[in-house]
Image 1 (cartoon, helix red, strand yellow):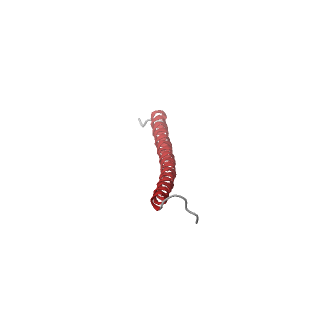
Image 2: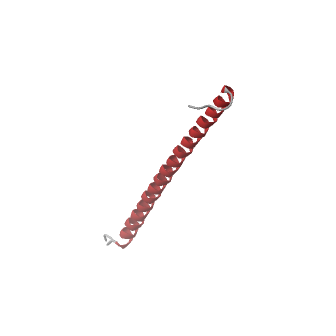
Image 3: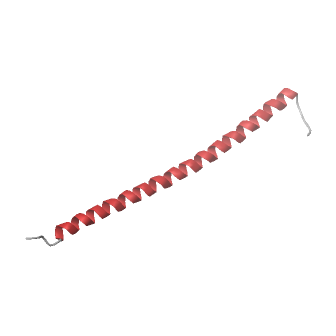
Length: 69
């Protein structure tokens, strides 16, 4: 590998490149995590909505069910 500059400059450049690479990885991992959390929240909201609908329908069914004399 051809190096230009002093050894110290090379080490600094190498460290900066490593830092950039690590930062990009962290950003990618955070995006994936955020996406998974969003999907989880959507599933939970859907489940709660279905439960509320079922509860409302069962309440309506009991209102209109024949009463025992």
